[in-house]
Amino acid sequence: MKAFATLLALLPICVLGATVNIHKRDLEGQKLLGFRVVNEQLAVKYSQNGNKLLFDPTFQSSSSDQLGPGVYLSPDPYGWIASDTTLGVGHWRCAVFANEAQWLRVKVAWIPREWGPDPPPGSTQQCDVGNCWYPVGTASQNAGLTPANTVLLSAALGGNGPTLQMLIPNLVANDASLNIETRCFNVVNQNGMRNLESYGTADWNNPYPFGLAQPPTDILRP
Image (cartoon, rainbow, N blue to C red):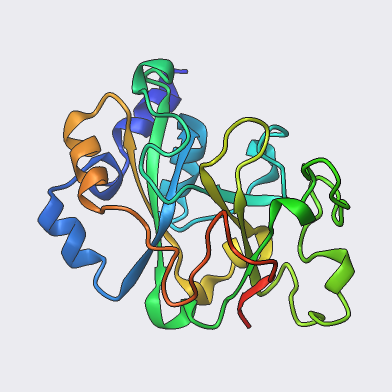
C-alpha cells in the first residue's frame, strides 16, 4: 500500500492537474471525445502508459458492459455520476482526447433503443447485451463496421438514460495511431475539477447529427 501511495505521488503533472493553459497548449490538434470515471489503479495505469488510453479487461465493469467490451464515455464531465461525494477520494474523472485528423477515419454507428439490448415494448431486439457492434438486421449492409474501426453511440441503459454513451471498443482504444490521450484528476482536487470543466462538453452532434429522436439509421459516419 505504501508503494502504491508513493507511485500516486509520482504521477506526471498532466495527471495531477497542471494549469488550464498548459493543458490547452498540450492538446492542440486533439479532439475531445468525452469523459469517464475511473479508480486510482486505472488512473495509475493510464499514467504509466504515457497518459494514453488503454483497454484493460481487469477494470471492465459488468454493469457498464452494455454494448460490448471497451471504454465507455459520456459527453459531459458529470454525465453519469454528478456528485463527487458519492465517489470519494479513490476515484478520478478523466477527459479523453484523440488526434483530430486521425479520428476522422473512425466509423461512428448509432444504436437506437429499438435495436439494442433493452428495446421498448413491441420492438424486436436485434443485438445481445455486450454484442452490439452493428444491428444484426442490417449486418449485410454494414459489413465494414467492425470493433476495429467503429465506435458506438447509444442512450445509456438500465435507468441511466437519457444520458448518452460512447463505446470505444478495445481494438480502437488500443490503436496507437489515434493518439488517444487521457487527462485525469482526483475528484477531491478542486483545481483539477476546474481544469476538467474547462474542456467543455464533447460535441457528438457534428458533423453527423444524432439524438434520442433520431430516425432509425445506424451509420452516422460511414
